Length: 442
Image (cartoon, rainbow, N blue to C red; front, side, top):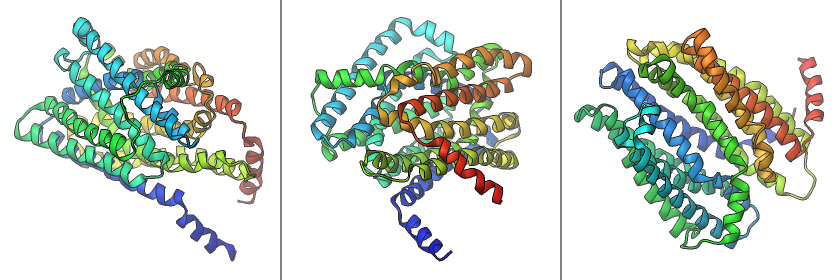
């Protein structure tokens, strides 16, 4: 036992622990900001369930645009960073940003021509579709910059940028909704302005600080982005279906946007768990990629053992989170929003399963064999949700939307595990066997 203090000291001094602590602290702060506004906006009667339903639908539309505009290039940027080829990275970032701008221009044309049918189908105000387009473009630029900050082991800058956006968004939302009585429109304006501010910071970081964004567009970078990103489009679209389409089903099947608002409130209440899982993954990815890039021998069984223990711990953490949210719910929202409690447990479990997905998906991204994820992971999960969601809503009521989402994410995670085992074989079986004696001793 003499070695235990030394090992603990080494762990606390490690970049993984320091990075995890910074990401976790920032994530908790950013999760607390919107939660802190819930009692003010809901108990004060400034926003209704319908207002939250409109904002939730706007999130659905934003995410689908982000998927298509980004072409998943941020994953490629993170991977190429470890190849230590500055010119290639500069060409990729510049070309990827140019592609996003071109795609945004194409979608603006669609909004002008087909804005009416799109707004009718999504149950979203047509006049605000251009704002959704701008928010999505800003989100892509921010995501590219934050991916580079993550792999460069700069958690302070990553969290500072995220916190700046959160503070601006929350502050402007409270001012516009309460002082100017702008209902959901105040939230939309706050989101648009805060995202514009973040884009300016990100563009400065990409051009002046990292010197990676220039007026260049190379064919090799274009082909590399498409070969990496296009196979992931069905996969990422499936992910969008799993996380967002349940809200559209609630709009269309129940005919009540307020129910979508309760679903969105439950999503916000479980967001701290999602952010904790994301923070751990953000800190873990650079360390993992550094290990995988090493040519010398290292203890792969030990890594797999730790990751498997994390897979076992995540569902337990989710249940604890759900119990805690149900307990504090009356303190956070008004009586009209108590119906969100029925969604919380399923959403927390969904977040836990998504964490398991991250653990295995990182190996696929590192291997660059993203084609393995095209049909077997999120796309398959999206198909499951499209089929299961209306059935479960019909059988179990609105809670069926959350149940279908959890089921779809579980199916997608199983597909991700099979892809990871093919893309980058690791000694998972040996690690599982090594855990058995430990459990028997206990």
